[in-house]
Image 1 (cartoon, rainbow, N blue to C red):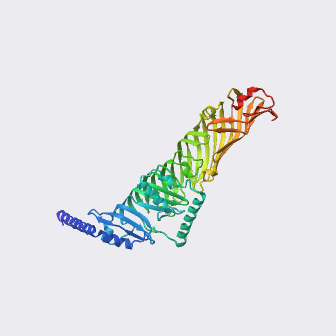
Image 2: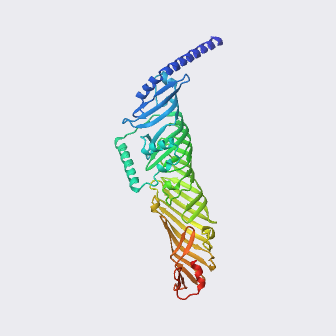
Image 3: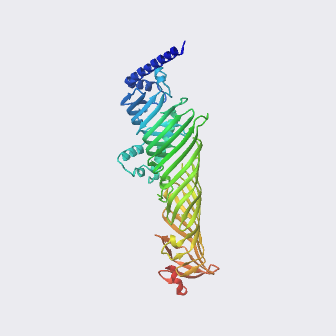
Length: 490
């Protein structure tokens, strides 16, 4: 058989195969609705029912649909997709061998999805919460402040406890019934996934996240390497921020638990939404790389804040290292500029309980910048500790301070020392002492209000701690001490 005959046969085979492919695509384009219903009735990954209002297919094998609803057996909407498309493996259609890898490409435009993750990061689709419905309504109405309306911030303790009880009841019901809406057990997924402008809700432990606009491109392979690239619009719920980005991969090849390698950035996070207390709304940006088992990844990165204001202290250019492990966020060697001096701090934050502790050391803080118009001139070193139980009322800041040489008005002194405590808008000082040579000026009525220092009453004591005089604005000096000390109370 010569080469010409062989080439002719190959051409005929290709022509017949091409014609057969065109016929199959033509049939598919006209019977795609019936095929869709046929496949949905036979699949076992999605519990409940999946319906579409319109569906059509092109001769290229691309299927487009609109008004897709996935509802559970109780009739609750799990996923709604106004418009989308997918591409299937034609061989599976020809051989009537539909399986989890039949869909090769999937695009979802403006879907509404609620996801729940268990302790092992196993995913399930769940019904939308009331906060999700509120987010959707407010975003459609272009309400830019919707995040504050679905956040835990401002809710009473009773409201938070009731929310926790409801979540635990739902979770217990799922455990008892072994209920799952999404079950891909022993089934592989391999497809290109594109999600555009998705409204997304995520439940994990006691955390609840609402994301207004999620855009994702992914190469999904649940038997090998899955690559993800995503970014979002503003988000609310347990945490409020301007947006986030996720880039990286998840390796499903390990037999037990998939392993991740993800770079995650959270932009302009509102600290008060994390339960940091003290009504702090200065924006914070977190960037970290997460690696390890997806059920308990370890992350390391950086925290940045242009400015941070707490009662009595204003910080600038805050920057430091962060670590994440087992729901704990650790802050290491965080540095900031404060009133011409510097601060170095470490701390830890529990993302589940929202409890935190931060300890810092400030050096060479200049009182002429911190307390303008107070007539106090010196540099101060301070130790500060912040502790919180998840809300402003249970947040305290306390510590001690000591200065170098300086002056108050025209009175020179060797140092000022004392302790302070700030508990829910109540800033108090104690054990305040001003050393003047062999003497000390002592007062427990040392306070700072609206940036102004007040000392009243004060006592002058000798080396043995004996009171020599007492001064108040109302009665002046007692014990006939010379009048130059009147300047202390001004």
